[in-house]
Length: 290
Ligand SMILES: Cc1cc2nc3c(=O)[nH]c(=O)nc-3n(C[C@H](O)[C@H](O)[C@H](O)COP(=O)(O)OP(=O)(O)OC[C@H]3O[C@@H](n4cnc5c(N)ncnc54)[C@H](O)[C@@H]3O)c2cc1C
Image (tube, rainbow, N blue to C red; front, side):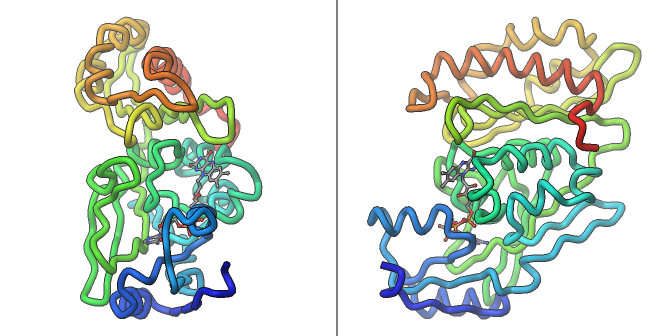
């Protein structure tokens, strides 16, 4: 199958986007291929040309400064799970990356491919939401920035426009006093549910809180209303406050029945895991990564 495809290997994002524009619907962006090759093999997508973006140097770079970490879209899950800068400054994200699938997928799949495919049963997007991550996307005409929260639109749907390439994932550092955690529930390789929490505490109360849930419904989401209710509350009250927001969670997350669990199960476990994530984050980053 693959031998029948034309492979284009651009060395810049501009070249890649120009190739996409020239070949039109016949071309697909090809990063690690963990998803794309399966889709092609099962004839769920058709292509005559693969635009292999892995040779683009800027997509394989990682840089950090006092603002945060900038990750090239073609960095693999394993490289990010192992990276000392990521483990130090975004330990919950490194933890999420280390739990993706298995060693083969982690070494083949890229963070950019994961976010662009936007499979609802994914890990990194959920934890990147509590970092207020944003993305740099570009085509041959120029580039733009957008918050990750706006990038995820629906199941398998993103805000990428025609001929755009995701080039960089920007992860602002959490405030110094904020601790974070990512919890994942799974029976098979892909997660049934993922919950991320980041919080700051003072005298047993929550002074700042960020929460996100992935895999329950079509896309990962921040829980802004629940975060507001938790701000100022004693951490001991968090499980009750989460429980009181069951209808809010159902309406926001729109959990669906699928092969990984029923909607009711995912909703029930969302409450359990949010309470657990808040407790764990309140105790500090104790996941052994930092
Ligand atoms: C068996 C299996 C188990 C998995 N389990 C998990 C799991 O537990 N957790 C999890 O989070 N994920 C899981 N995944 C998903 C995996 O993480 C993704 O498949 C992988 O990260 C996709 O990256 P890729 O580079 O291989 O993308 P590709 O397959 O190359 O591309 C995927 C899609 O994104 C587009 N694309 C890729 N990069 C860009 C870019 N920079 N700009 C624009 N478009 C782009 C491609 O055109 C294609 O449509 C699993 C996948 C498999 C096959």
